Image (cartoon, rainbow, N blue to C red):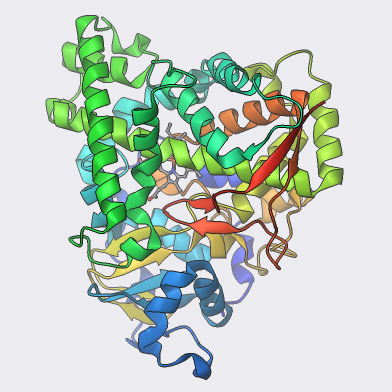
Length: 490
Ligand code: HEM
């Protein structure tokens, strides 16, 4: 395994993700890094070690399908670069060191393009497009996601959280992840999409938004994209429902377009405003693109915030000291939390930071190489599937003491200063860092504080032998379904 010397490149989690300067284009990266010029590179990428009694390496793919996280953990113990076998699609190369993340996100990003899976699934929205089109889309959407704009959503977020949670009563037991799935969709629609959902209705839309992750379930993901697995069929139906909804919302906005897109406070008004005023390339504002954009935002901003909140409440329920400090902090607030309060919520901030370290919703990121690259002496050919192992990187003992322990107190200013820039990257990094990062962090903190002031949540699910909740690694890392919490009023 690589040595520890990389720790000298230091930054806080905030700084690592703060590279969204608005100036990043695909043309300002080098075409070949010095690492790629290694003359003694080898083509023999290691396969993960496996116990001989489990059969030959050709059976790896089935074990990998069964437990994708344990598989990469075992592999990472021996190497930062390893290979897995896929059915009908060649091998995948896994990269699990912060220096690899730095190359993928920043220094060699032209060599690691988004994988085609995303475009097949989501068309040409911000998450998938590349090059000039990406620069234009990013610049067009940025005004909605600046810190200042996002702060403007704070009251709307709190209102949606309260609207749903004030119906909770003492002694309720339910699957919190399911409840948060509904709540985060309420929030996303009411703020970014500018339409309030019915609390107990809009089921078709809710099911559709939930089924967007079906494209990426591991059993399907390891198979070629043309095989119509049941989960892929569910995904297709979900996508078509959401595109219909996008059309409906677009028609509404077109009937009353904003005269100045800069005044728009929701995505649809912004996009329609840009089109009406001709202020952005018309190619990115076709109906097709606008639909893709809506589905992309729903996909990127829904499941991710749901699972972060669920894992944060699991952590509170399983760490009584932390819960006591958290309650003390939120009880000191003078009424419902506001945008201005968030900066002072130190315990809540560390809780969210640590939750995203141990349970990063985007636990692995797929890429495709556009040219041959050499990583730690291994030659990775052009057109290889690459998987950047965010979760493995964030659980590496070379960068975090007791890396598997849930320990928010680790996030001291010293750690934030000394940590490798890319050892903590739940929101990705470089110019394509998550555009919704500020929104997601604000939503998580406001939801935690709003709920924490009113309710105490107890975990009724079983922890695994590792002392963690059972997880289900789909496109996002989710808690395994059906894990109940008990609600008590405070
Ligand atoms: C805890 C919540 C979230 C996490 C952990 C998260 C994580 C990420 C990550 C890792 C990426 C980079 C993907 C890559 O490099 O391939 C990303 C990109 C993106 N995220 Fe998020 N995200 C979250 C919430 C949100 C929200 C709330 C929104 C929108 C409302 C959003 C919209 C996007 C979009 C549009 C991109 C693509 C940006 C680009 O390529 O320029 N995300 N997110």
